[in-house]
Image 1 (cartoon, rainbow, N blue to C red):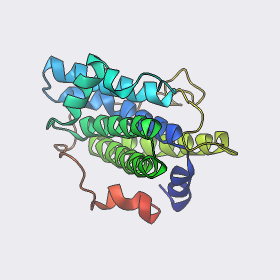
Image 2 (cartoon, rainbow, N blue to C red; image 1 turned 180 degrees about the horizontal axis):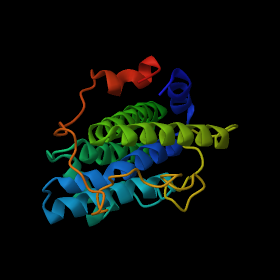
Image 3 (cartoon, helix red, strand yellow; image 1 turned 30 degrees about the vertical axis):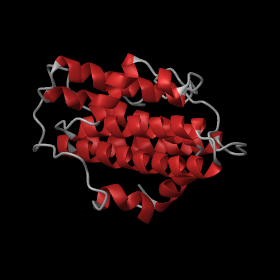
Image 4 (cartoon, one colour; image 1 turned 30 degrees about the horizontal axis):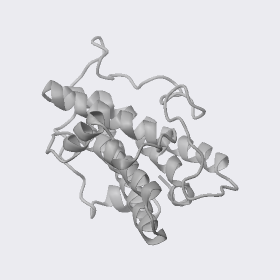
Length: 224
């Protein structure tokens, strides 16, 4: 990502930032299937991604204590150690969305500002982790993920001009939303779930990307 794209991310309202994180995580979600997660972990990760998608769509009305068992399970999942960068991308998207929820519920501006910083922090993490996961799977994956992220940022920046609030307007991050398909030209070759094209990743995916990792922190520097 170039300096222009890093600037676009920082300029987006919070719901748009969550949409970016969700779409990054959704693109590499199939890669999580190569790891031996127990069924309950798979369900929790899907719930975490669904919650983040709901938040991007503006579903913020129920009070925080009544998030329900689905979100509670997702919150447990993001606090649990799990292998694979694809899993960490989903967890970062959830934490970005949760911070938007807390910003919406905040009673004082300072708390909202603090949560807004968390949203940017976690969205940048989701972008970097998804890109790293794609790169470990294959060079074509990496190039395509980077192109799709840049396209999302550009579309959202155009949509967000003249915004009147820190949250911005709701945005559906799914294939059916205004941003369009996650993969404009179809999923990359070798996507898990295609038995005829399945392949092993080039190397084991490590765990969480450190905040000092150059690929994670590049959004602050202006490129990765």
